[in-house]
Image (cartoon, rainbow over all chains, first blue to last red):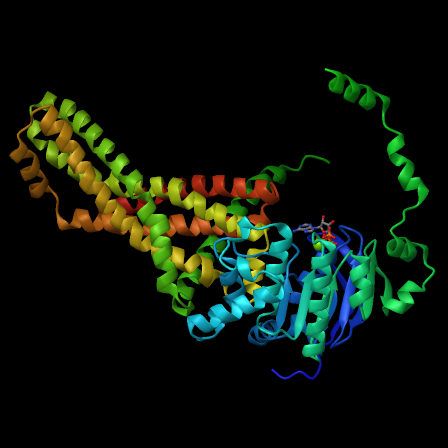
Length: 273
Length: 265
Ligand SMILES: Nc1ncnc2c1ncn2[C@@H]1O[C@H](COP(=O)(O)OP(=O)(O)OP(=O)(O)O)[C@@H](O)[C@H]1O
Ligand SMILES: [Mg+2]
């Protein structure tokens, strides 16, 4: 399928689970060939939004346009072809527990091509090397740390050179150096594949500052900001400033002082016993 | 809310409709699984791996259950037959009970506990940790990847293990009947040869194939739709899915056994 640009657009999008609406009336365009970052508090629906972009959930209302096509209006076969252009890093990596890292990373190739085994294996190890995991190719996911699984998930997402790369919190749970490496990897991929659209969900403001071309901020089920990182940094919306500078309003900070005296006494009793 | 005379009917109807709904969904699930046997790449390689997990790893259990089952049949059969002075019939009693009924049913129930539960748990964990979504995103059909190989493997494993169960059970009956209680060895085996017909054997074989489909469908289905459970979410849902899978499989095995027996006799 030839699509000139892999832009992702939301049109009056509302989504949620069952009766419950989590995001409502989102309209935004994530530019093609750029890195867009979705920001928002924990539990505000970022992962849910990502799953809708992939087409795993149907929105309750509105449309998602991917590469100029209405994702939920495509014939099944064309939707599948579209999905082949997407690489996804799930929040917890979502590596198959029954396969080693190398087998996991190689999956898109071993399932869809008839390349010889050694070629596939080499490609898997080379991609693992990009995320600093070459030595761990023969380990099983459960033998690794959360951050390592996440990096392996990223390797799997990029092995088939996707046109759209969706990453759910690629740097959470990583140390600052490895996180910086992941940022560099994303930037170098952007430089290498000029028309690759990258969508990153992140809480890591340093990383956002480094990689973001476009930022979408979600809060209370709505998009409260959409625009470049510069305009986010200079915005004087109090919530955005809190997000940028990691501060909270005093009121919220003071809350834990008001502990119920009964709870306090019970805990003291327990500690003394 | 005023009591409506139809409320009772509604309360009765809703679960019934739900059951029918689920039964339909499971049937479609099975058909889809069978269809994808044809479309799945590396189906033999994956099925073979599942034969190892479902079949080969259950072999010891089946041997153990089989030998004791046969031994108990030998004992019980002996003490019943001795009242009629026809202990010579023991061979035929043991072998027919095993081949027609106990072999297929007990093997299927044992495999539900041994292999079916782990199928549900494994697929359920894959569901709640996004692994099935990840397969879909990579355009790897999750039915073809997860369900079809298990259907093939069960269709291979269930009849083979049933045959092993029957054989070892007959040996168990021999141990108690002949070696312990002193029935004539020749009579024991002669009676088996004499009374077991090919129809009995094929009947047991068909049963084990049907049970294989039931167990894999129910267990894969429960795992695959762990996230749709209304009673729980997350790891608890995997646990509940496993329980449901085992319970539903066992019930369906016995119901199907009754229906098949009434057709086969
Ligand atoms: N499978 C599900 N069924 C029902 N509700 C769900 C499901 N998954 C998530 N939710 C709900 O949707 C909301 C958004 O969840 P989501 O995982 O999208 O949050 P998030 O923004 O990714 O949070 P985090 O930053 O912690 O990952 C949450 O309030 C959660 O309770
Ligand atoms: Mg999330």
